[in-house]
Length: 108
Image (cartoon, rainbow, N blue to C red):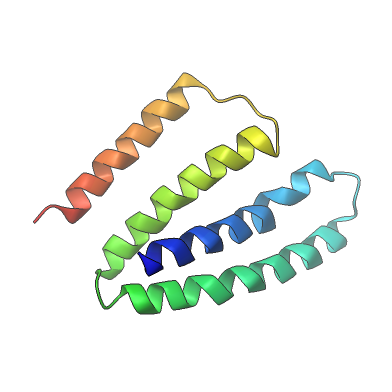
C-alpha cells in the first residue's frame, strides 16, 4: 500500500510538471520549463522510493503497470478539474482496456 500511495503522490506532481503549464500559455517557455523541472524534482522524491520499496513485492513490469494506471486516473481527474476538458466515452473504453492489462500483468 505504501508503494501505491507514494506513486499516487508522485503522479500528482508529475502531472502538474508536464501539463500544469497549459493553463499559462502567456508565460514564456523558459519560465514554465524551470517551474516544471522544480515540480519534477518533487515528483522524483516520491517516485524513486516508491519503486525501491515496491520492488521487494512487485516485479519491475508490475510496478510499471501500477504506475500507468495511477497516471491515467490522476490525469483524468486533472484534465476534468484543472484543464476543464471534457471526458469522452472513448476515454472510458481506453481506461477499461488498461484495467484488462492490469489483470493480465498480475495473473500467474
